[in-house]
Image (cartoon, rainbow, N blue to C red; front, side):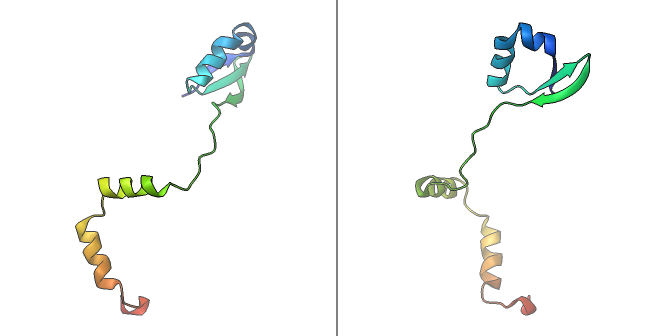
Length: 83
Protein backbone atom coordinates (compact mmCIF):
# COMPACT_ATOMS: atom_id res chain seq x y z
CA UNK A 1 0.00 0.00 0.00
CA UNK A 2 1.24 3.47 -0.84
CA UNK A 3 2.20 5.81 1.96
CA UNK A 4 0.08 8.95 2.27
CA UNK A 5 1.97 12.22 1.82
CA UNK A 6 0.18 15.48 2.56
CA UNK A 7 0.70 18.57 0.46
CA UNK A 8 2.29 20.17 3.53
CA UNK A 9 4.77 17.29 3.92
CA UNK A 10 5.59 17.43 0.23
CA UNK A 11 6.23 21.19 0.47
CA UNK A 12 8.26 21.00 3.70
CA UNK A 13 10.20 17.79 2.97
CA UNK A 14 10.46 17.67 -0.81
CA UNK A 15 13.93 16.10 -0.85
CA UNK A 16 12.89 13.35 1.61
CA UNK A 17 9.81 12.54 -0.46
CA UNK A 18 11.91 12.42 -3.63
CA UNK A 19 14.38 10.09 -1.87
CA UNK A 20 11.50 7.72 -1.08
CA UNK A 21 10.44 7.76 -4.73
CA UNK A 22 14.02 7.10 -5.85
CA UNK A 23 14.04 4.12 -3.48
CA UNK A 24 10.99 2.73 -5.30
CA UNK A 25 8.25 3.78 -2.87
CA UNK A 26 4.77 4.55 -4.19
CA UNK A 27 3.11 7.54 -2.54
CA UNK A 28 -0.42 8.95 -2.39
CA UNK A 29 -0.70 12.73 -2.30
CA UNK A 30 -3.43 13.94 0.05
CA UNK A 31 -5.23 17.23 0.59
CA UNK A 32 -7.06 17.46 3.92
CA UNK A 33 -6.51 13.69 4.33
CA UNK A 34 -8.30 13.05 1.01
CA UNK A 35 -6.28 11.20 -1.64
CA UNK A 36 -5.91 13.28 -4.79
CA UNK A 37 -3.03 11.70 -6.71
CA UNK A 38 -0.68 8.76 -6.84
CA UNK A 39 3.01 9.52 -7.16
CA UNK A 40 4.96 6.64 -8.67
CA UNK A 41 8.68 6.12 -9.20
CA UNK A 42 9.76 6.61 -12.79
CA UNK A 43 10.50 3.38 -14.66
CA UNK A 44 12.55 3.37 -17.83
CA UNK A 45 10.76 1.62 -20.64
CA UNK A 46 12.26 -1.82 -20.96
CA UNK A 47 13.22 -3.18 -24.35
CA UNK A 48 11.26 -6.36 -25.11
CA UNK A 49 14.14 -7.80 -27.11
CA UNK A 50 16.79 -9.84 -25.34
CA UNK A 51 20.32 -10.05 -26.76
CA UNK A 52 21.11 -13.46 -28.29
CA UNK A 53 23.82 -14.19 -25.69
CA UNK A 54 21.37 -13.53 -22.84
CA UNK A 55 18.73 -15.76 -24.47
CA UNK A 56 21.25 -18.60 -24.88
CA UNK A 57 22.18 -18.27 -21.20
CA UNK A 58 18.52 -18.32 -20.11
CA UNK A 59 17.76 -21.40 -22.21
CA UNK A 60 20.85 -23.23 -20.96
CA UNK A 61 20.01 -22.47 -17.32
CA UNK A 62 16.30 -23.37 -17.59
CA UNK A 63 15.70 -25.73 -20.51
CA UNK A 64 12.20 -26.82 -21.53
CA UNK A 65 10.64 -29.68 -19.62
CA UNK A 66 11.53 -33.02 -21.28
CA UNK A 67 7.84 -34.06 -21.21
CA UNK A 68 6.87 -30.89 -23.05
CA UNK A 69 9.48 -31.54 -25.73
CA UNK A 70 8.11 -35.07 -26.22
CA UNK A 71 4.52 -33.78 -26.45
CA UNK A 72 5.54 -31.19 -29.03
CA UNK A 73 7.41 -33.81 -31.06
CA UNK A 74 4.26 -35.95 -31.22
CA UNK A 75 2.09 -33.15 -32.61
CA UNK A 76 4.69 -31.37 -34.73
CA UNK A 77 3.39 -32.68 -38.06
CA UNK A 78 -0.27 -33.00 -37.12
CA UNK A 79 -2.94 -30.72 -38.52
CA UNK A 80 -5.26 -28.96 -36.12
CA UNK A 81 -8.19 -31.26 -37.06
CA UNK A 82 -6.08 -34.33 -36.21
CA UNK A 83 -5.35 -33.18 -32.64
